Length: 532
Image 1 (tube, helix red, strand yellow):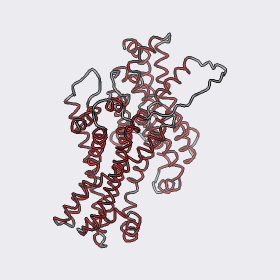
Image 2: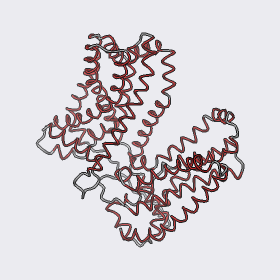
Image 3: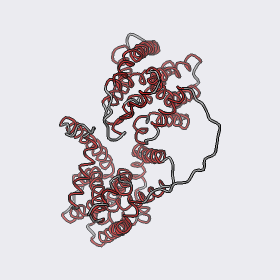
Image 4: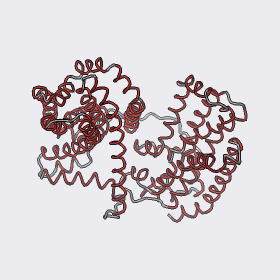
């Protein structure tokens, strides 16, 4: 039974990536191959990134005689990557799985249900671990070398370190599950935490070079800090570096005892955790004056509430909004550094406005909200079509939601640029107008593509913003246009136009394209929506 449950859960995770509809029960071979190539690409990128990092660390640490710090840093990276990559899956698989009630009603032992969920998360942790441990082992073997005892201990560490991460994830997932019972907007909390972990990851990646320099100059002091502050990691590193069995035993006890304890506590309380329901607060009705909204405003509120009801939909469809706000704050924080760099570039004043415009549209190109707005209606599309509302108003509201959510962040970024770089009135107007124009263009383009190839037979709303053709096409077109604009000038028009003239030409082209696409939306788009 345990083997069957593990097989079912693994198939469920894989099918969420390769199967996109209820009607199509078979998996597309082409889609499986595409997903396999995508995962292979991601694996190669991560292995290459960690390989370069460990290659830069091994020589200075080996020369200073603190090779064990190399393995300590490797294990810390494994713990961080596994925890960030699996913590939300742990919460979903163990505490908030939708099939808990169904499985508990069957003649299946609670132990098998729990272990099947734990084993699936453990497999995912091993996948994350090999992205770090594989390059670290290869670099050390080719640079320093390891004997048979060290290799055996490395294998033991590889098999046991994810158990410690799993224990951490289970504890954090338990805390999150209890917090979520008392939170009304669970999607907001999930979104904030996802962005927080993502921000920590980006900060760590962007600071790698700084950390490398710090390790080279202060290797021994950092080694002492790890020895005193992260006791199990220290003994793990000593065991791998020296083949010390005592240190290996200490490390195993520090890893296995928390894991066994957490699994035991989960086993005796699994039924209560899996079947507990959030406390509901009885709301006393208080009579208030009725508020009347215009039809457009009421529909817009409906669209916004639907879009913001799912954290993953927001994160995938509107990540550009977050980056735009972060970008504006970063410009303010690093103003002095940016001014210093600009002063070192001759003639930058004449190119400043086009460069700022490219920055604005580059960040805004990551917003693809309208490309899934029709698909998100799903099997409820008939409701809005049955209301006495003109098709034109429905499409304008979906277009308006993209603009209402994205334009304010873009204007904030542009105003920061205008103030920091002290642009003239004309340049300031252009710096604000261009990102707004590009946002309108992408909004209309995404909505047209979604009308052309809508996806209503999804099982989960996240499919609409991750696996649908309109979203992928809008994302690649919007980001590709940024490279086309920059590359077109550098490769073709640099000898024909100056940069400002080229900018005005691009503005004219995008205004023309936006008007043409809007006309298509108000003609073909109306007919297409009525046919859905």
